[in-house]
Length: 112
Ligand code: HEC
Image (cartoon, rainbow, N blue to C red; front, side):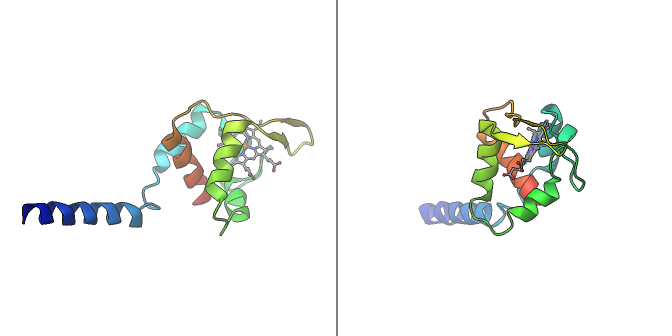
């Protein structure tokens, strides 16, 4: 009886976690990560700066199941990018190796 109870609580917790996966984005933490990394020097939420707005990025990846993985790769490998003024440089690599922090930032961008 007790075991069954524990099993059903565990089940509810696990399914609850999955169904709220999207709502679990910590917007404040994502912005803090972005600020600390100077991301907002080149990106704004809805206007183009040296780089595309995050809304534009979210739009580009809309419906793409690999979106999150692509963004994480972009932020951790420093690919060559072209700035709005035409110059090229390697993209900023995020200053953390904390996967959940990077994932939270990527998910926040994609949620815009
Ligand atoms: C020196 C300016 C600059 C800084 C700083 C910068 N970016 Fe970018 N970023 C760009 C440019 C330019 C592009 C456009 C790349 C392209 O489309 O070729 C880009 C593209 C992106 C993309 C879209 C990638 C894709 O696959 O389309 C994301 C997401 C992104 N940046 C996030 C960030 C985050 C998060 C930070 C902070 C860790 C950051 N950027 C810092 C200039 C910058």
